[in-house]
Length: 500
Image (tube, rainbow, N blue to C red; front, side, top):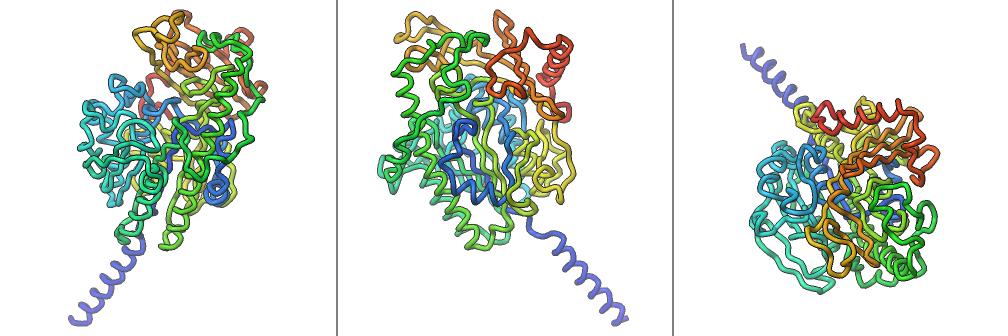
């Protein structure tokens, strides 16, 4: 009998050892989301360390897109893995559902950090969250979204100095002292401190959201003279008239005035200067992960919430919110276990794919989650997963305007917003559109419909016209337009599996 007990104990111990081996600690995950960083206008040029430490060490996605080119709706899509028509965040205002009580009770309560926390991940957030976060009507600084263990969130929109943070539900005010207050560096330092004090037993997830390169473009003191001879690129659709486009693109004077050109060149340089501190952040994070022996078991994602334009886009000065590649294409680089170095991935991926990809890495059953996106782990690590790329996808945007006119631009009337130098407005109530983007199998098409009195349609063949100079809606075979229209109708009401 004692021999049988011994055999049974040995079997149980062996099983426990094997179980421990098969239940190895899941990979750690770091997600860095910059604010308004383009990829098509040289937005990654100042980031040599990031390209070397993440891109060269892993995969660079050359066709990464946001499903909506505006901060709060895009960030809500990143957190939920859903298109805006499902999470219902339409713009950056509380009335547009940005960080509203409705958002908090609904989509935010099921966002992917909540699920990571349930899996035992130690979670850390620092930086800009959602544009209305911390406002009194959004619960104030006391409110901490579910799923976060450590919370260092900016109140409101991007700033570099003179801001408030919610630090684990307590307000922390900051001034204009570089070493104590510069937000990009503060995010870096607190993330490094978290890595020093975390429990080594459990995996961790960090989401770092620096303000760069969003306005007001305040660079760290040591970088304020960098790129002195840099100007916004003058190629592509730079200062081209938008004669065959939606009315908002037909309003700017062409060619642009000298004052507008000087303004946007200055903005372009300052944006680059702010990004050098983000480049330093990436370098310090990678060094820290290496020093604590976690680098080889950590996935690092680097991306932005949306693109940006600086004068290149048909004489519009500076902003996002438009349907063109400049505003909807974003940087995306990933390194981590199973990802071969120096990969360039052509398959289109979306920001709604980040949540299911991160959950896939964590071991969560993605099929059980209500997401519109799909994991792209198979695209960058085919040895770990099988999967297919999507042939087409949706981009949607709800325009914002003011009910009253801008006093400094009296001729324009109400319904417009984001009016920059020379009274050129970048947004309006009827800058509301939905596009289907087809990419792959020899096709590279974009079909967009506006919700306006003209029912305006824009169609581009980016294979022959990569800068979207000519709207070919009147030249395309009507049967192609019909197919695109039907795809668009389906995508605009899709949910979950039907979006894939």
